[in-house]
Length: 460
Ligand code: BGC
Image 1 (tube, rainbow, N blue to C red):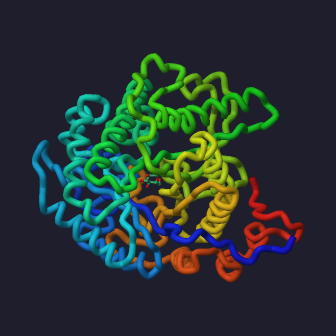
Image 2: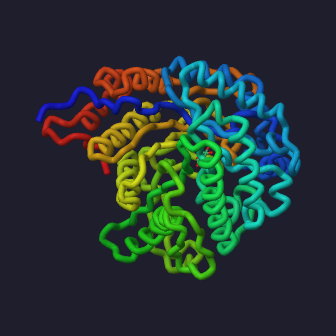
Image 3: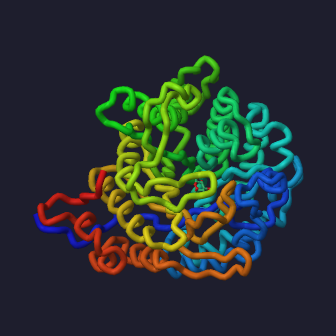
């Protein structure tokens, strides 16, 4: 079989980047994350500060996205700006978001807007946030207000970013606010977030029937350290099932099939409450059975030795760069959901300050997306995390995910080589041999098929 010289993506494929309000806007002092920073919880001791200055001038970066010929851009609304105190609405915040969305549209960048991306107003956090089911109504009220005021400018909404990460980091691992370590509470928060998504979904559907509405989950693979060890396999499979697939099933069906399912009340009306699946994928971890760590479900997680890796943070090891994992995730979601909805990759990114692994990583992950599409999995878009370096939550400014390098002190931007490569891919709506030759020649064969005719020989 001859080598393919081009990997074309379907017409209308969405190309863009993803970001969030707290990480980019700057000055969000009514958010629980601001308070968390003041309490000294950022591992680098840094502060978000002006972030990427988007509240003043997001348009500067939107122009860079336009120059890359992106046709979509994902951002989030900052609830703590729109409703800084309970029941008080700031029309100035809405005006600013209207200006941002208009600017995106004028540049042919389709706005994809998330309503909740980790940051909540302090007043809402003080009421117990999503740990209290009674508070969901506040999120739904804010959702309605946002849709009523912005629906003429956006028709693609994501309710909640990564309920599984929000619940795990805030309520189990405790590195995000409110810094709890409580499994039962984690499950409650997760359940309430899924319910909040469903209620928000139907509220949006009523107000804007033609809108596309969904949410995204974070998918992280867990593989056995030793394939031949039944104990390693069971430990890995338990983590994989609980973190990825049971959560997806719970979101799909409203029923949790967890060991503690009796503690988790079912969620009504789950089924059908999304128009697409948002997929955030970054990495995988290896798992070795370890009888001494029941709290980790008897599985010791680690990064595969000798793998190509992301830059590590101070606390989080961003781990292995594992392109084949994206294909596996897409395929598994397709199977778990019986292909019921289109998929969008709403985040995929690499921390690589020197940009010496990112171009290859993007190419290899996109080749996996292409492979999934060619097998009939309806992937409709790819959003790279992120356009510019931004404030990486508890890791502060320590790790760099941007296509564009940012100096947060001077606000100077320097596009990385990945930015020009991503622009070329978006422009061509394809990965061409020329692009690969220029940015990552050593993966030509793995991307286009080696001489033995086997396509996409990216290591598994
Ligand atoms: C989050 C982003 C974060 C990214 C990189 C995702 O889980 O949605 O806010 O910056 O991971 O760590």
